[in-house]
Image (cartoon, rainbow, N blue to C red; front, side, top):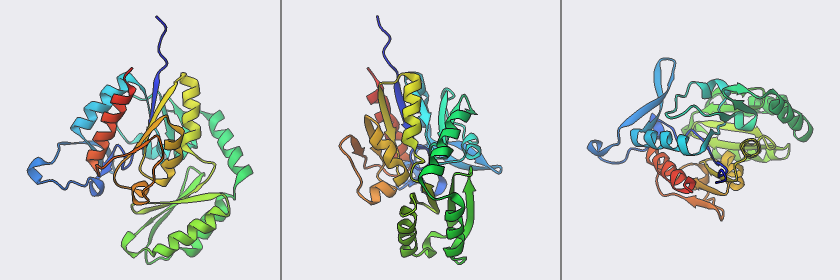
Length: 272
């Protein structure tokens, strides 16, 4: 009997499968709140969670499909996450800038990405300088460069002028970059730096014929559009904009329960 091609499941992590305390959205009575599992510790403090039920679902998924964590996090930020289930053979970090194979960067992939960025968009130094010059110290808390690929700001969201983000997006688009506001972070990312390109490469290497995806932010839109089926939670940039597409399911759940629902959908869709 011929072996069936594997199913590839590419999922964003933060605010899709894992959640900070501020993003949990535990709106139910305390006595009915789900039990939580901490999956990330940073500087000796718990940082990210999923429900215990979601942890069991992810473990099951890892046995049935090629699960590929697909994140904008840097490699260092990703590697402090301790997800349940089998260790993923592939992971995508830095929004597609790094493809990890058994935890190690594929140098050829990274070289190809950096060459494309140099050809197709304005340099990181120009964008970083613009962020530094225009961001107001009143609401700016941190200015970071990620993996020498893109930049992000950590801000006080309640003090951030909405027009500033819109003006930055227009300025960036003219230079081949895109802007995404996620919680307290504003990302400026080169447009050719995409999760979808790296996922297609994993699909090629694994022989996967069916790809599932999930994500909550504008940086996940290309990932969702590249999948055969996709899901977005009821929170995040995509939900705020009412974004959808023919193969995308917009879920009503918000917060950590959305992560649980997404994993249930992955499991159902990955069964033969």
